[in-house]
Length: 371
Image (cartoon, rainbow, N blue to C red; front, side, top):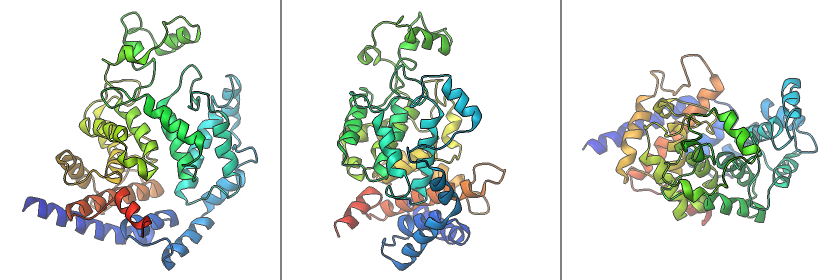
């Protein structure tokens, strides 16, 4: 009876808030409402119309207009000077800006063939190492799994799933998974805990790495250190953009690691240590949060048949404001709050579908693709 009541409450909330959001939202959010929540097909007349409106959306047009033929965007003078003091791209603001703007373009339903988007993707892949990862953007001393999760999501978002270079990056990310199912930032989330480095400031420790003054790095030597939940979430977020990987055993182990640590303090001060980050509503979703975790988990098939999901879903329901929306803070952020609300609705809609025994998330997409 209690589960039936929860299902009815979720279905009512999704219906009420979806209708309100659809009336006020930007074109890209209306597109996701139509396809993710209402289940409309891509060739549905209203979806086609909404995609045309996405194409005309001024922030999207501006991003395409400012994207240069070499696949980069111009930087502010301050950021350009900061980058010039370092080794240069992919270390610095050029690469960071590319990732962030590609994320926005993807949300606005941009195709790789538009403007110089493909040049941007090729620029990223031009930095790929023989090992398979993309260096940077914050250091060239070691690879950053969370940023590589970000990068592979963008590459797959723009249709490069089958590219051998992307598959190599995929394999490299999986190769770094630890026995507990998660991932860490190398050196600073494992070696840094050795007694001789534990009290050292991170910049000083990084200088030791740069000087070659630390022992040879072997990840297996530090498996006793717990993984980082937010690094893991970023890796999983990237890998699962290819819906076929939602059934990958290693990907699911990583998802289990995230779900098992929901609401808990992260083990690492390097990245969002406080448990309060779980309940902060944030957008864009590459900022670690419970909202991002639930979006990924429900997408890859975690629903009502997993008892661990009930408490996070109830938290999400409780985070809804009296106006029926979900908001980043008491200060108005109109577009961000629209995105947060749409993501919350998609999560709840998938969960309700799981309660009804219907296909949801990646499974539903795969079934539709098979006709």
